[in-house]
Length: 204
Image (cartoon, rainbow, N blue to C red):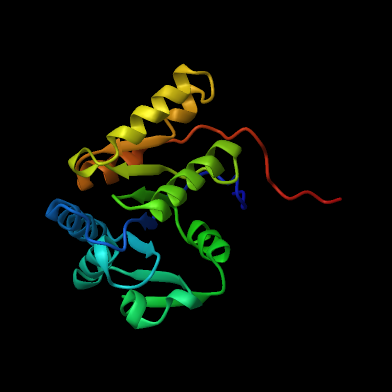
């Protein structure tokens, strides 16, 4: 079998979850995170996340851990003090920068899920979709659309297609569901489109 960024996707062993470090305005956000965490543990899928134990991130991580699943938190040193982010659930890896954090999250994961969140969640989601479009990885990218939180952004993505800035197959790279179990099912069966470029290292 081949190795490297363009290797064929094998079974999903670990999913990286991006979500807010705040609880949000609706209790359904944290509850949805908790249900997703239970679902991952039930399926023996490990969680990779941004560390800490606060907000929706904490709900997901604690639910995975409490139900016997594996948890890997990757957090920059400046954000690591418990007074800022709380204690990281499971195994903690301390990195020096946000760039290093995201690169490691991608490397350690087989798929990605975004829950409600702010700038950081949005940026991580779009970066993983962009990396998929460019062919840096070929891993499923999903949105758990709790309470229609992501509806405005999904409408914007459709507008990008209409206005000629995004091809439909790349728009479809992002899988969206409202239920945690349905989203995980969809990611397990999803074959992402081949990216535009081949990043396989070559001998010079």
